[in-house]
Amino acid sequence: MNGGPKRRLATSAVIVCALAAFPAWPASAQVGQFDGVWTVRHSSATCSDKGGSFRLTIDKGSVRGRIAAGTISGTVSASGAVRWTHPARSDAAPVIWEGRLHGNTGAGSYERQDGKCRGTFALQRG
Image (tube, rainbow, N blue to C red; front, side, top):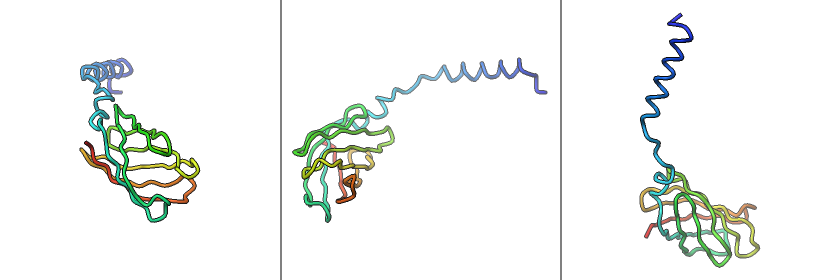
C-alpha cells in the first residue's frame, strides 16, 4: 500500500516545494536572444517580385516591420521558429513566411496564402 494517501500527499508537497525553489526563466529572456534588426534576402521563381531584401525588427518575440505592400507582423519562439505575414503588393493577399533562426542567421520559405507564388529567404542580424 506504500504508506497510503497521507504519504502520497507528503511526497507531492515535497516535489512542489522543490520545484518552487527553482526560479522560472522569464519567457522574454528566452525569446530576447533574437532581438534586433534583421535583413531578409528573398528569391522566387514563381512570384512577380523575383527577389530583393527588406529589414524587420524582432523585439521580445514580436516580429514587426514595414514594406511597400504594408505591415509585417509575426512572432518568434524561444527555439527560433519564426513566422510573419504581410500583404502581397499586387492584391493584398496574405503572404506567409516561416523559418528558423540560429544565432545571427536564419532561413526559411514563404508562400502566398492562395499558393500562387512561393520562394525562399535568408536572414542576417545587424
